[in-house]
Image 1: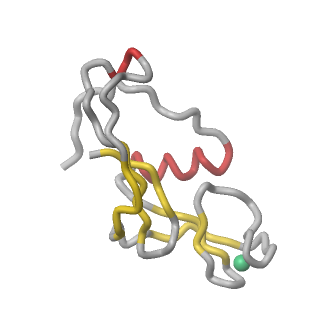
Image 2: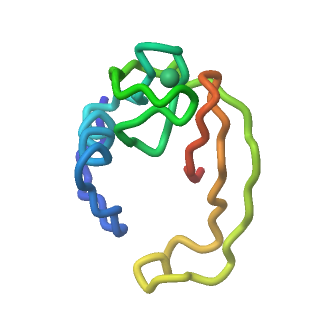
Image 3: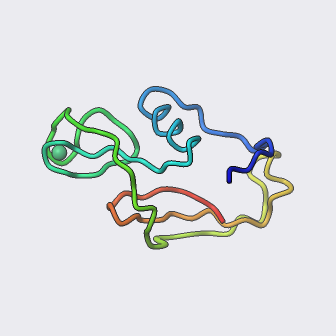
Amino acid sequence: MADSRPYKLPLPRARGRAAEFYTFCKQHELRFQRCSDCGTWRHIPRDMCAACGSFKWEWQRSSGKGKLFSWTTASQPMMPQFADSVPYSPAIVELEEGVRIVTHG
Ligand SMILES: [Zn+2]
């Protein structure tokens, strides 16, 4: 069940392909672009495949499974909106599909 409380932390400005990515996130779907020619997954969203140069792609659902790649612990808020959140640990997770995302727990 989705959390209905208003989200108070700042969100990234979503434009272009990134807006599509965040629309899936709002629907509780983790999707990334996958090249239709070579099968390479990619994130951050963009039009061209960096592996083969193809402009053919589609959004595909991620398994959501991955490994912790790196993390840090923030003990000082970098923005005033995070003052009530410290300490927190932003992390980079490498998903099974090979893409990496920033998250926090
Ligand atoms: Zn490709």
